[in-house]
Amino acid sequence: MNGTFYGERKSDDIKVDLHIHTTASDGTWRPKTLLEKLVSAGIKLFAVTDHDTTENLAEAAALAEEYGLKFINGVEVNTTYKNHNYHILGLGIQPENEELQRLLERNRQLMEEKDDESIKYLERKYPVVSFEEYKEYKNNPERGGWKALNYLIDKKLCRNYKDFFNLFGDWGNPFEKLEFVSPGEAIRAICMAGGVPVLAHPGASFYDKDFKAVIAFMISEGIRGIECYHPENSPEITRYCLEICKSNNLLVTGGSDCHGEFLSGRCLGVPDIRLSQLRLAGVKIY
Image 1 (cartoon, rainbow, N blue to C red):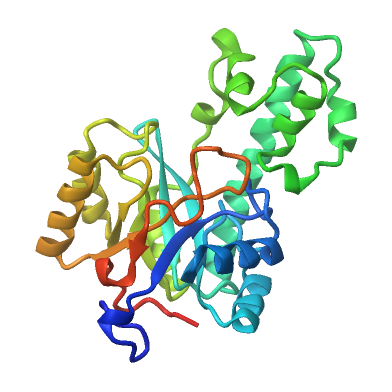
Image 2 (tube, rainbow, N blue to C red):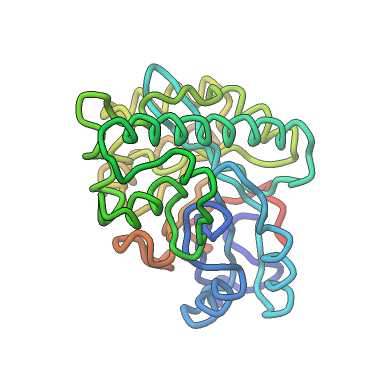
């Protein structure tokens, strides 16, 4: 599919958002709420791309059919390369694929272990922190974020995710200590699951600042698309990505990276992306 939508004319160009998070990872909206928001925003084609999980895809797909929207099964995989965290989107995946699920489980286990280690570190610094209490703590996914963050907010040690990272001082950012799967592993698993691997938000602040080198490396690893349209991509990065996609026959995608109310700067349908701006050949759309 490239610029058309199941027979629709280009004059009927539709609004698209292919990067959205739900309560399955760190978003605040369950699928039902998300679908209501999508309808209000006039978005007719969307993808759910939670971090390292496909938990809410089946429910989102069923609701999309009920609401008359088109849907893409997605996931956002954490990867590590040269001490940097990079995100690979898998669009059009088969969620039940065993190899992909093993890789996602490995990443989730790493995150859980690092959260445990983080709480144990803070337990030595703050009397109000108890690892045993944390293990019994019931996180409410509709708050967004993650369990350790919400536990520490309830302990009044931080107010938000930015404060969270300031708690660790010389110990360092817990996320930077993680060694996720490699980009190549993620790309291969996504392909094995029938999906298309896409480099997410090349302008992300936590990526290596040499975005051209990052893109060149990801192409060498087998990436098949780039998220050219994203709130963190500057106009320069967007232009460059579009040129690279054209010259390398890569897919062009885009999305808001909305997390519901968790991240105030990420709003559903922003930037305004139309299907005619994208190239989605080979992506399975329901």
